[in-house]
Length: 128
Image (cartoon, rainbow, N blue to C red):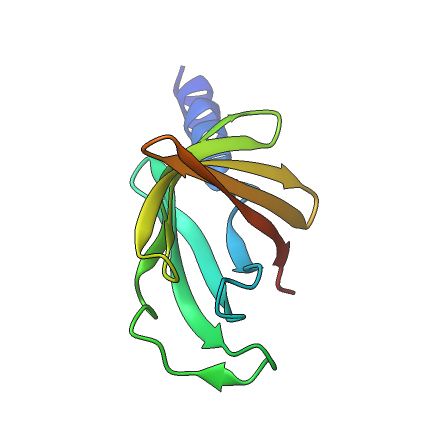
């Protein structure tokens, strides 16, 4: 009986250690100002969140941004087949959108709506 309990515990811990495919660092599409950023996605409780960790101008030069450290992705959960639902904050418009994220390998298609107004957030690329 002890062996069966040990095996069950090991299997449970091994399953918990598996990272969600969305986890990691993503380069956003350029915003209305031509700026882009790197967003680090990690678990936050039972959901996924993504903090802006670096900001860049249109030429790729790192810039200071008041949004570094802010959650760009929040309240995000997998809905199956590489699809996610949650919220995405858009710094260039200072709005939070109900988001749909579609993961396909190292590409992440981002879109969202707020008050019936929808926006294509472009395709983000995984930073390696």
